Length: 111
Image 1 (cartoon, rainbow, N blue to C red):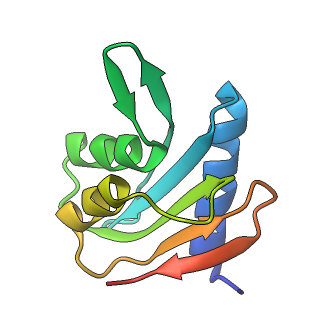
Image 2: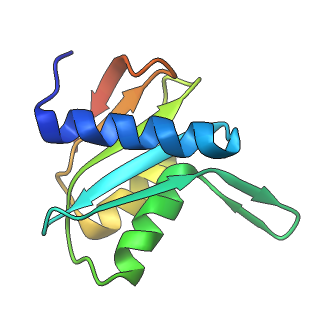
């Protein structure tokens, strides 16, 4: 699947977020103003967040009111419902691209 340049940039950012900390997932989102936010999965005794949940939370904390697109880089080709719901909180129609660790887009989830 060929992505436009802006969505391809999200794949690069998500891969970097994942690699930086050796996480199981990396994610990146672009808000309605074109700003990007990244995150990696968090697994602590008292807190567990997917990379996409963290990216969306960062965007929301920065005042984003909408998302244009999201990317998750993971070894899984499926998207968990809570990550999908996090994106839907800020956008009903933003595509969520799921990519493998090498950056190959496996699928795109749209509602």
